[in-house]
Amino acid sequence: MDILFWSGGKDSYLAHESYWQKYPKNDIRLLTTFEEKSKRVPHQNIPIGIIKKQAKALNLPLNLIPLPTDCPNNIYTAKVHEALKNQGKAVQNLVFGDWYLQDIRDWREQQFTESGYKCRFPIWEKPLNELWTMLLLKPVKIRISAVAEEYQKFISVGEIFDQNFIRQLPDDIDPMGEKGEFHTEVVFK
Image (cartoon, rainbow, N blue to C red; front, side, top):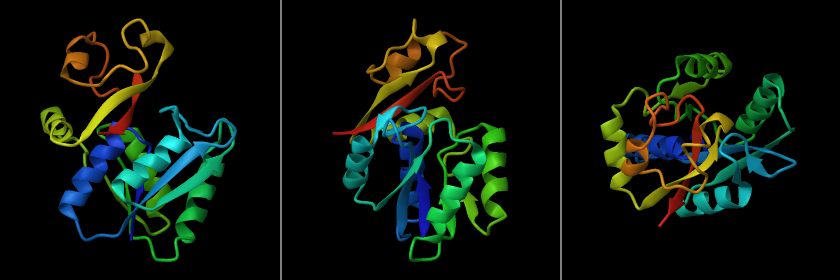
């Protein structure tokens, strides 16, 4: 069995699509951590109710892990490891939607490979055009769900993430929001 770390945003959706294309027979389940008090996914700012609807649209089982506000890494990893052990089946692969931030990939590999899991990064360093094509061909739209304060004069929550959106971004904003400039939500059509 494989566990896809699901944020509800475009990167986890792209990871799902890429991984599923390569391994269509694998048993995939989603895992989402959320802030227990607000009932939202941190960073993406997506309510758990929407995450449940996304899992239903993908027809995949969903594991929800509540976390305290401003959760420290040791509590996060302990809760995730506990959830992985309680799947009822052995977990082989952990699938992540990381695109190119090496420090995050290194951290994930350090945290999970020591416990015997294989970390998979299906969209790692894929060309932006390839990711765009994948999004254009799927029955989804991507909406901006959160924006870092310093970029709110350029980006608004609720905007549609498309080629027009990317064209209007200043050069210092990563077109995929990889540096935390903005986050997204997948909306199934």
